[in-house]
Length: 171
Image (cartoon, rainbow, N blue to C red):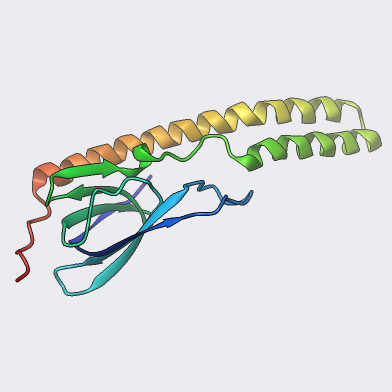
């Protein structure tokens, strides 16, 4: 379902930004985001954008990020021994603004179809519109819970397997 990769290195820069309110088609309502630049052992630099309030890493800390689908979902900080699951710290909401508008348009579409065809279409459209909201909320809640558990397991592996080694101190 998810393919996890890890990015290890030393934090070069971490900046916090405040976001605007999301539009209807944007599912991420995070009010804050962090842009973190990481220097890897191969002397390459990687920029990661984390949509979360939690960021237990500062410049110079040795960290490992767990990334799923090009999005950071967890982090282990070896310098201070802290870890954070971003999917638990700031979870995506199960109800989004577009989920309230879509059933209204489904009902209106059913009303228009019922005007030209059988009135049974209206009954079908309204019942589907009523069932849409609980179905979507339960499906998102299950997917979010599965991702949170998978990230917890991956963070546990990173901590116990010693995947990341402490970087030498800068002089």
